[in-house]
Length: 316
Image (cartoon, rainbow, N blue to C red):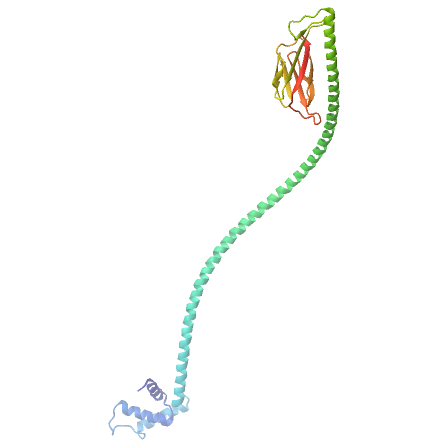
C-alpha cells in the first residue's frame, strides 16, 4: 500500500470522515486488523459498531470532528507537497543568499578595516596639515615684517643712491678740474723743457766764455754759480732700461715707473719726462735718490704702460 493510501486510511479512521464512508471503513479495519473469522466479523448491524457510529455522528454534529472527503484531503496533501517543494526551493535560495551574505560580510569587514586605516592616515595628514598651516602663518608674519624692513632698506638705498649721484657729479667736476690741471702742467713741463734747454745752452756758452769748465766725465758740468750732474735714459713699457747709465728703474702698478739714481744728488733734481703715445704725470714722488712718474691715456686718463725718455739734472 502506497504512502498516500496509508495516510488516507489513518486520517479517515482518526477523523471518522462521513457517516457512511467512515462507518464502513471502521468495520473493514476491525475485521482485518484482528483477522476475525466469519462468524465473529462485524457488520453494519453489529451493536458495538452502531453505538460507535452514533458517537462519531454526535461529535461531528457538535463540530468536534472535522468531516473531510477523500478528494478534499488529497487536494490538501497536494497543496502541502507543493508548499514543501516551494519551501525546499526557498531554502536553497536562502542558503545561496546566506553564502553570498557571508562573502559580503567578509568583504565589508576588509573594507571597514581599510577605512579604519585610511581614517587613521587622514587624521595624521590633518594633524600634519594643521602644523604646516601654523608654520605658514608664522612665516607669513615673518615675511610681512621682512617686507616692511626691506621697504625701509629700499628707501634708505634710494637716498644713498641720490647721495652717491651727487658725489659722482662732484667727482666728475673734480676730474674735469684735474684734467685742466694736467693740461696746464703739461704746458708748464714743455716750458720747463725749453727753459732747461736754454739754460743748458747758456751754461755751455758761459763755460766756453769764462773758461771755468771742467769735467771728469760727461755727467758733470761746472759753472760759475753751481755744479750740475745730468742723467738721461730710455725705458721700455716693462721697465727695462734701453738707453742710459747711472740709474735703475722699478716697474710698479700699471703706468707707474720709479727711477733710482746710482749716486744720489746733493739736492732734489729737476726732471723732464717724454712719452710719444701717453701723457706723463710727473713728480708723484721724488727725492735726492729717486724720481717717480705715471703714464696715462691721453683721453680717458686711464693708467697705461708705455715707452718713455727722460733727462734729470741736479746738483752734484
